[in-house]
Length: 177
Image 1 (cartoon, rainbow, N blue to C red):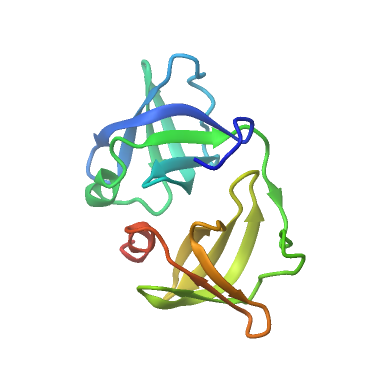
Image 2: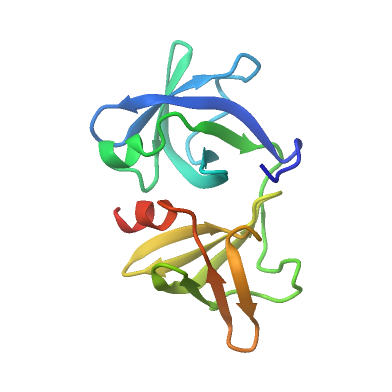
């Protein structure tokens, strides 16, 4: 992982799905507080080497486990994709910003994926310590992409384009919703 220890904290693992509507059953790690994940808080499911960001819609503590409903995961099939993943939370609070290390704004840049082609224009850019993300919209569906050198293959400031090679399954999870 390319985050510093102070940016994301490992708190749980996805043990299994719960029900048919996309809920996940999390087991907390021994050193994690069971109230660290709350409604509307960001969580990161570590999949294929990349922390994938989600917002929690609801949480319910059941003994030493937590049943969580995440935005954009609304079926058992989508939830199964994340069984076995580690769950991280931000160690620091998030900061909203549209600037980045390049020194210019990315809002309204067109985003092209190596496999899908055009996946929308950047509507929102959020600086999360160690994991900035941007949001596009394609056919009315939001897609959240980590802003990482492992994903971004080319930035063309003059054409206002970003080219990416998203990890397998990342775009699919949003388009399937």
